[in-house]
Length: 301
Image (tube, rainbow, N blue to C red; front, side, top):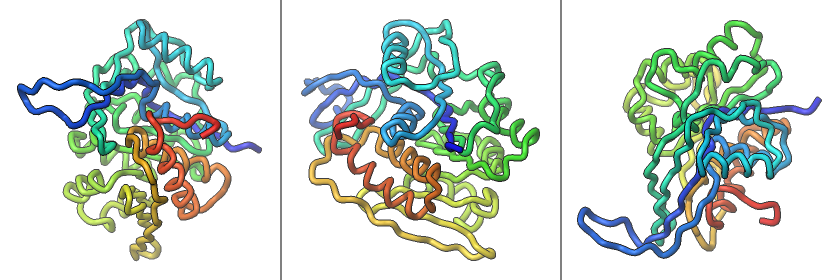
């Protein structure tokens, strides 16, 4: 039977603005270029799964307005399976400022794409999926967050011992309440995060040993040009494996690199590969993404 993933999260329009460097207060600078690309954490993960010909559903709200129309058209053109009908609110966008060294900074105008409701999950059967992904960007501070509630209810209702949950907290981890993170940890997710995000977690919850004692699942820490680290626990002993990066001759921008990485890991796991094998492949795919403009790869790339 073909294995399948459920990708929960936002699809947004990235307004990619190329500049030499970020301005200081009061500066007056010119852009070098500006383009519109469909992105967003969940869309980027789903795009990598599509690129690698894996089966998935993308649970992502799409609103109205110019940006909503662009997203809807893109999803249809790409043949993405999207269980939700469009919502009445307008979509926003994300302004992505890319400096000449490839680093990016985001300024988001949040719209319908970030508003999840309990009714979105009404017809979703978690037993249909081998892997479920969700992102911190889409989690609210509400104690009854719809995404977390869906996952909690799924674990209470179904036997999901053979299902894998992926959580990518993103930079929002710094502002997420500790109680919310504890609810997420109780779902026993594989946590996929950057080195700085890992630092935030350890500051709040202690060492890797403490974190794995709560999640009962591995940690994947991406470290840019230094590759990635896989942290697991066996018989109460921590094991850290360093997995080298793929070199990149020309960094265009780093938009979506982390999303491409987690999407590649999920794709490999759907094929039954080990986490170490999956991360090694993901390092290669993330390197491909930062060598192109925007967050996704075309089939010829």
